[in-house]
Length: 248
Image (cartoon, rainbow, N blue to C red; front, side, top):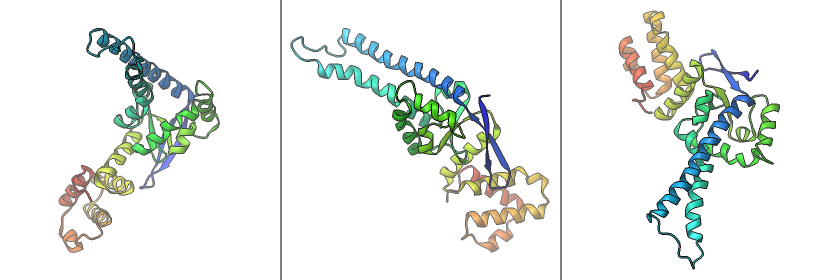
């Protein structure tokens, strides 16, 4: 079965289980992405040739070595081919068109969206994972590692999971909020959990938990002012934090 589970302990003590993608899902996503980047690279060659015929790009003189001309045709195609994965994963937050079709996503071991640095490291190690040919090293690594990861994932601290659960979407959202508000993911998770349970809590408990959370987020906050703030206003302050409006 092309699936295993990876459990993440949340800040509220609730365990979140993510479905780890196996070699089959990886291969499916890779094949789709391979064809897309190959088509894009070939499309550049064709477009360059047509533009040259139309004299948009001046053709090389017959008595000159057309080195510059050849580089102008080859380098952009190579850039498209080799930069496809890192650019797509950064712009699509851990996904590519192939990963999206295969319904998988790249995440960190804490369930968050990988940073640009982690994505670049992961893709740099494609040179190792692709050895000696057809990603033999990477495929072998996914078959023997606990989380079905390749060497690039081990170096970057990432893994591929099935993008089908609300839990994953929530963890990714928390990672985004952490970057926007400069708060740690644990505090944001507690804030969101408190708002989700708000209606089930007694008024006194709501206010007590909200004040404790706000003091944790902003240790320098005026304690007297917090004690004088009623529950609806406390909730509004927490909601503004989750919207990224109260950057710390």
